[in-house]
Structures are given as C-alpha cells and as structure tokens.
Length: 245
Image (cartoon, rainbow, N blue to C red; front, side, top):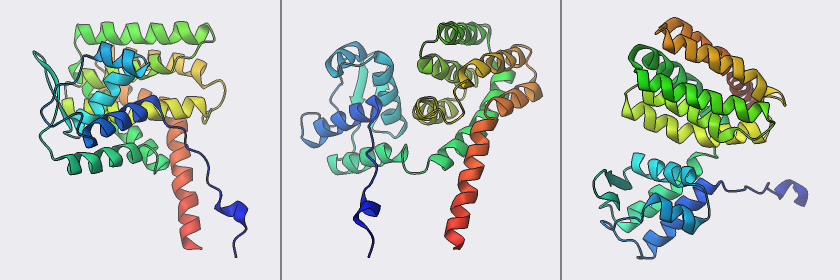
C-alpha cells in the first residue's frame, strides 16, 4: 500500500492568463456571455480583471487561435457561434495544454522558433527591425537594472514571430511562448545568470535578421534556446527510462 505522502500532489498556481480564460469560461457557461456577444474593450477588461493589458491580450489571442473568439478590427471581439458545451470543453483543454507536458512544449518551441526566425530574416521589414530593437533595448535596460524582464523577453520573441508575416506561426508562438518564458525564468531552470547571457544572444539574433542572413539567424536562435532544448531532451530520456522499467 502506498504511503499517504506519495498521494500528495503539488499545488498548481494558475497564471493570470489561465485565470482570465477561466473567468471567461464561467461567463460563457453561465449564459452571461452568449455566442455572438461582444466583449468589452481590452482596457476595460484589464481594469476589471485587475491585470495588465498584455495578459488580457494574450488570453484573447489564445481563444481566437482556437476559434472561440473572433475579432473584427472595426467592431471588436465577439464570442464565436459554437455551442456552450463545445466552448466549455475546448476552454478546459486550452488551460490544461500549458501544463501537461512541459518537455514537449519546450521541444515544440525550439523547432517552431527555428523556422520562425528563418522566415523573419527573409521577410522582415524596416518596421520589424524597429520593433525588434525596441524590445531588445527594453529587455537590456530591465536586466541591467536587476528588474524582472519576462514581458520584454516575450515581446522580443513575439516581434520575431510577427516578422514572419505568417499569422498561423505567429498565433502558435503566442500560445507557446508566454507561459514557457514565465516558467523558465521564475523556476530558474536555465540558471540564475540566464537573463544577462541572453543580452548578447538577442543581439546576435537581431543582427542576423537585419542582415537577412537566414543561416546565421537559425544558428543564433539555436544557440539562444540550446539550454532549454537540452532540458527537453533530458526530460524525454528520463521518461523513456521510466517507461521501460
């Protein structure tokens, strides 16, 4: 018989994005939000949820990617026409998606960003370079001031995704990156000094994109994400050993 201590499970702390998605789920399943209803503006939602607008934007983008919300630039964001039962089931799956297989998410991010940066190097515009430089400088300023730079790190990688000019790749990265970066930084998975090391790595990525050097861009991202990729590989190897025994 198992000791009771073996049955105790770690407590999972929900991210602000998951909490927003969960509250929207409750509003939908309770009938307060019906298919076709328009959501309030991001600013109003952020005030009501008591979080930054970036969290609200991320939650909306995730729900849009899965077809649960649809946005019209002229008139706003609406609940899709899916039935409440379908919406309920899919929203539950979205929340679980970020937590169930960390190694698989790390691996997916690695290969997705390798492809993304090659497209970004090929297709980037002058405005993309401006956005990348701004995000990079904001990140460096925060790190050099010993401040939390999670959001700035996200924005740099999201700027790469937007430079691909591929809306599907951008949406997939928007789903994968925020929670992963937050977990990696807060858990110090890649070490205490990872933030400072990333400064030079970000600069190498930007230089390659600016020069439209596709091979150099891929190599720069591979170097930047190598620690994370090795953790993923080790996790899969450990799981295989467990499964074989």
